[in-house]
Figure 1 (cartoon, rainbow, N blue to C red):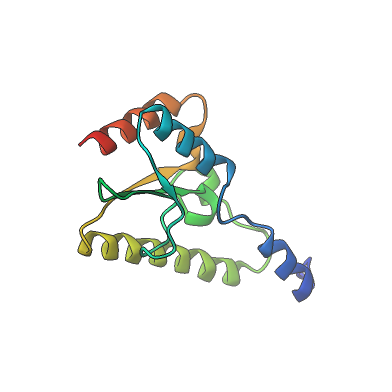
Figure 2 (figure 1 turned 120 degrees about the vertical axis):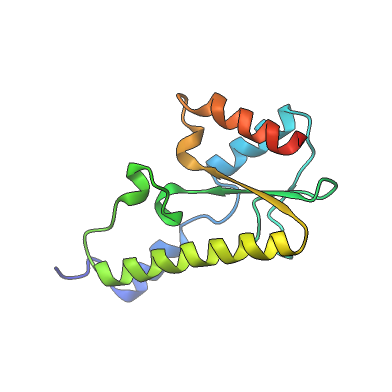
Length: 138
C-alpha cells in the first residue's frame, strides 16, 4: 500500500501531535490540584520530561496516550495501516525511551507514576483518582 502522505505532509501531521497541555494532561493536573497538591508542569530538566512534577515530594507523573506509548488496552494495540515497519520501530523506540526515563528518574531519587489515557475515561476515572491520591500521599 502506498504512503498516503508526502514527506512534507507527514512532517506537518506529526508536528500537530501535542507534547504538552493535552486534554488528558490538563485533566490530571486539575485532579492533582483538587486533591490539594501543587504541581509544576512539563519539566524539560528531568529524564523523560515528566508531565507533572511535585518537586517537594520528589514525585513525577507521566500522562501517556495509549496509542503512542503502547498500552495493553485496545487503542494501544492498534496500528496504522501503512508503513508497518516504520510504525513498529517508532513504537518500540517510544517504549524503550519511556523505560529508560523511568529508570533514570529512580536512580536520581524520584518516584514516578504513569497515568494512561484510557484510565481517564468515565468508567475508570475513580480508580485513577485513587491511584493518584495514594501515590501522592505515600
